[in-house]
Image (cartoon, rainbow, N blue to C red):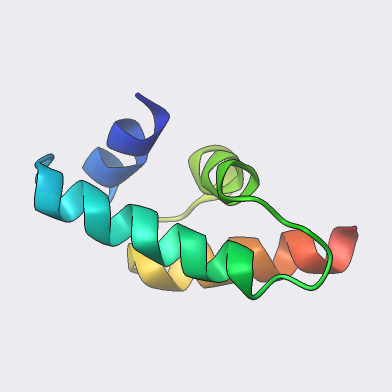
Length: 71
């Protein structure tokens, strides 16, 4: 439900293809984390602090960076 809420906020259509794209993006950010930031951490940060003046990909990168630097 959280993923779908975030996707809706950024204007994504909720379907299997779009969910897979967003999930893969979050996975790549997790995989590149040097301090163990997880997909759900990024998703929660986007949900709580995201700003839809950015694209979802931009906001995910911003959230990932903030979380990376705060650990």
